[in-house]
Length: 423
Image 1 (cartoon, rainbow, N blue to C red):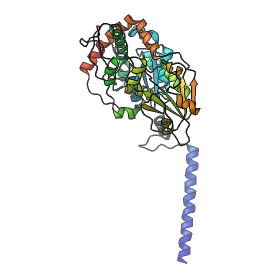
Image 2 (image 1 turned 45 degrees about the vertical axis):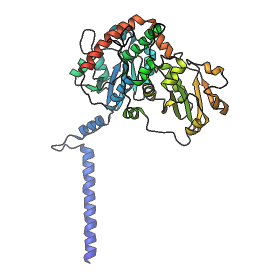
Image 3 (image 1 turned 180 degrees about the vertical axis):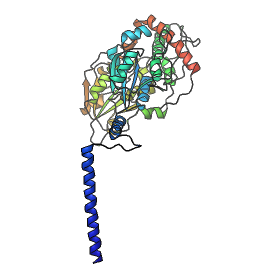
């Protein structure tokens, strides 16, 4: 009897509780949300949750002229400060007015920036200095949360800070500049090559390539001698951490179609990007072989490459179409190499600087040709490393003046720089 009574009481309690709960739900539905003292309204909580869910969008702009791994590392660091990275590419006219003529036109710079794997969106014809109007457009139309720039100063011709407005608005964040490379430095290397080539019949000298590759070159003045305060050879110091930061974490699957393409990829340019894009579209995984400095010197002359092996490897790794690189790939593609990397297809572009080997019966692609896995791809752009060098040489005086001005500001930066923690 007592057990039956307990069960009856339990059932009655459940029924009454259900009725009360149901009545409460109906009352809330009819009357709307009830404000509880000390707690924000439900709608406010919902809005706050939506804002928290919205991705943090960051903006970084630049000229990105003769884009190099330093630019890519800046974009990588900027992307780490948010969820989406929008990049503004400064127009040709703005660059000319503020720095001197660009080496690469806007259309090529847009291709380069859009191919960097950390970039989500690109804005063409961005202003060199962020104006009140453009900053408002970034915040309202592009939903930008923060504007990013490196720790090196960016001054306008009148000496004012190009990012003063963003700083005053409290929407500015700073990243660490990548040491050892700049467009000024690279242009200087090419100008040195021109000077050394013209002086080669008058005196004996060591190859600039060895200086670039070792990362130790001495300062060289306009006469090409090892004294003075002229253009600075790269002091890039490759680290395993930097290579890991640029690398992809994924490898090919067991059934992946692996495409292989090799080359120097010196002064990584839009022509390289476009052929890599086509190559990637032919398979599931793109493996890129980067030739050694010594190989390039032996095939293209003692003044090549302009960029050393590790610099070139980082530039290629930053490309969104590339899955993996071989740092110091062999010139000849062997059967053992094809088996080791499970290569399904070997491709080569139609635009290249040294095609003389194609006339020989035995050349680097002989094995993949015999295996029936070799394919020539029509290169979308008629651009080579020599194209970039010719642009510099044809406008030598303008770039020399531009470099002298920029070198002075870079020297001041290096003399006064402090440690900045980077990612």
